[in-house]
Image 1 (spheres, rainbow, N blue to C red):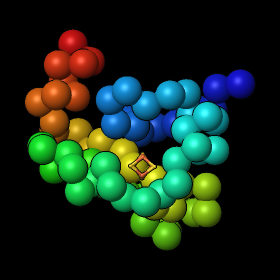
Image 2: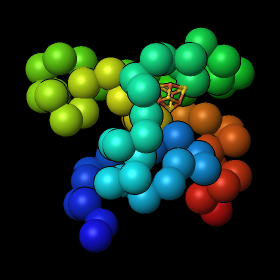
Image 3: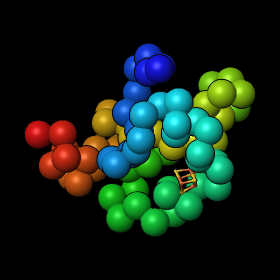
Image 4: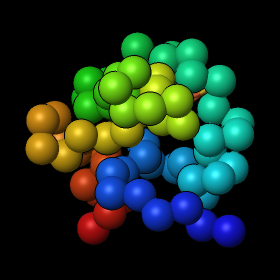
Length: 70
Ligand code: SF4
């Protein structure tokens, strides 16, 4: 079952349901991203998304991310 979303997970992320159940929300991906393009959802995003990572294409586009997409 695929969950609809209006944001991008970091490159290589599995489908959304599996991602939500496997991500420990540790934030390590934010620390190690060389492009500094990964952000964590804030508490205001709700319990399902809080502290999970996403790629912000508007704020900090990742060259690696664009290479994966196109
Ligand atoms: S927050 Fe990032 S590094 Fe930590 S488990 Fe989730 S995807 Fe992996």
